[in-house]
Amino acid sequence: MWKRFGVLAVVLVGSALPLGGQQGPPAQGPVQGAPAPAGQAAPNAQATNLGADPNGNPLRRALKTGHVSNYDEAKVGSFTLPDPLVLANGTPVRDKETWVKQRRPEILRMYETEIYGRIPAKTPAVTWKVTETDEHARDGAAVMKKIAGAIGSSPEAPVIKLTLYTPAGAKKPVPVILLVNFGGGTPPPAAQGRGGAGFPSDPPVATEIVARGWGYATVGYQDIQPDRINTFMQGVIGASLTAGQEQPGPDEWGTISAWSWGVSRMIDYLETDKAVNAKQIALFGHSRLGKTALWATAKDERIAAAFSSCSGEMGAALARRDWGETVDDMAQNFPWQFAGNFQKWVGRWNEMPVDAHMLIALSAPRPVFISGGTTDQWADPAGMFKAAVAAGPVYRLLGRKDLGVTDLPALDTPVITGDLGWHYHTGGHTATPADWTAFLEFLGKYF
Image (cartoon, rainbow, N blue to C red):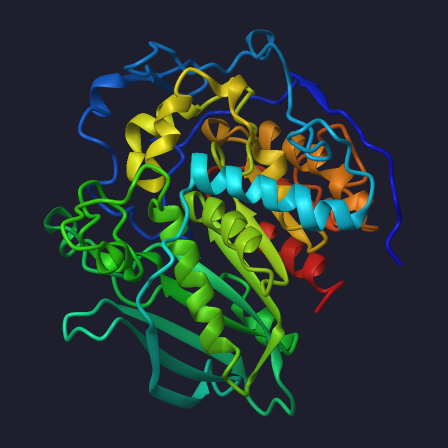
């Protein structure tokens, strides 16, 4: 039975946060030790690199606004978040029907138009084919399938290479965790020989996943769309451009929307695989792919749960909170990941019609788990936690449980009693084994 709750206006201010050293460059690195794809940053990115603060956190100056990265809570200031439970016309949302039929579609359209870009009406069909099967994978514990999905009908069509593991001897269809990982595609010349292509690595808890009677699948994200500047003529975006078009329109998709499109096409396949329980598919992504996991889950309600690891700015972190990476940094250094319209919000964060709590809320009532690291302050772990808290009213409106806490929990202490989950690990920009263990416990309430 759905419960009704009143509207809750959300106002958040900066609060104390343990500050640690950032490891390496801005929070866009790979998961599980794989090398970052080369050529990711826009050509002017190096000119804005100011090094690091005394704690090792990256300092960057935005070219258009001159803004320099902040890691001082006293300088975060106060800000007011747009209320997810108030329609654009000012009418409060007080019931499930109004959320589902009016407010949720409003928020989706704003994200499509202003942030990630809408997917064109016509995209290539994906044709799936099982290319290899191993009945004795993982020392006999699993059945492994390699599945190739051709994007379009051209002989040069990009191919999505999906690897699926399901427990050996399973008597019925099993839940599956889909990992969209770094790797895949054809690396640029600078990355040749450095790895990152081909089938991505397994999660650190792969053995436990199979032992639980679940399956998992992996894919390299650049099989769907390259993650580099000036590559709109490639991948699914290139295959979807109309005659004479060299890049998407200002409200059309960037690569995050393209990767989310690819997630949906993989779910299309998983729905046909008799080994898979298509009603229980969870999605994992890290960093920019953590952003993708949130957006794909918002777009495709077949996704039953999401794990967004260290997704940071324009992912789970509040954009209005001036900490670490900002809208200005994202728009300057990774413009291809977003709609062209995203550029107009440079220096105007507080005027955006959406913020991260609304992105998280788009998955409600489905469970979402978010993680961050102490030495990954560029990704603003506190801002991700605050966004999860601010998504709580939507979950409560829909009869589900929020995080259950409003103050940043102790380090290395998972918060997984509600339908929103959180883990703040000691360490850097990575999905740690402890994150994964907490996520499996969180997911076990549903699968």
